[in-house]
Image: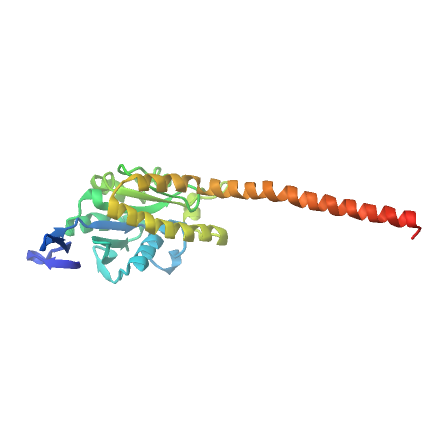
Amino acid sequence: MKIQVSKHIKGSMLLCVRASLPDNGNGVKVEYTPWLIVGLGNPGTKYHGTRHNVGFEMIDQIAQAEGVLMNTIQSKALIGIGCIGEVPILLAKPQAYMNFSGESVGPLAAHYKIPLRHILLIYDEMNLPNGILRVQPKGWTWPSQWSKECDGPFGWLSRISSIVYRQVPFFAGIGNPPGTMDMKAFLLQKFSPIEQEQIDASLEQGVEAVRTLILGGFTNKITRFNLGQKYKYHKAACHMQSLETAVLPLVMTSFTSSTKGHEISQNYQKLDGS
């Protein structure tokens, strides 16, 4: 199996992968449809580690896990070409800031002849608790933090609506702003240590979800992944509650026994005259 980047007329390129599979002693060449996996965020160290850059962090995690080098600039995006299993992938981090990410997604999909159903768009979502992930199997839904700004800084969405309404969204929960905190300030804020731990754990889980999707499509495994994500904090809370339920009576019993023993010892000392 190898990745093949073929040059065509006028400098265009086609990303494909071929694998030789045994078939009664004869080699059979199979061509796999590539995936374009795009993480949204803002470029530069200033925005590194902020809530709005979770998409970038997921791409970095996938690249590291799959050994993909992100070392090429094309269509205003930092890209890397590799494979998950035998399926070719094109990882992309648009470099024209979040507001203009659409200027990279459309051209890359067209250039590498990637069907819209094979575009996975990873971005932050405030309607999900921090660290909760969700893969949406049926088309685009507006992220809550963009719904009121589709004609403002996020106007690029309307300019590529024919693409984004048909791609595969991958939501990464970042929670809601506390109190009356400004939404933009919240999005550009870094995570707290506890929140970052949750994000780090979710990134690892996200890589496995991407592998499952790329290799098997939308199967029951993705459904179970979404369900597990929905209740993972609930399970943790129930586990802690179960521990408290089991341990607290033992502690109280030990404390009571210790207290009674101390009282009996005091009473004995009084009777003994000591």
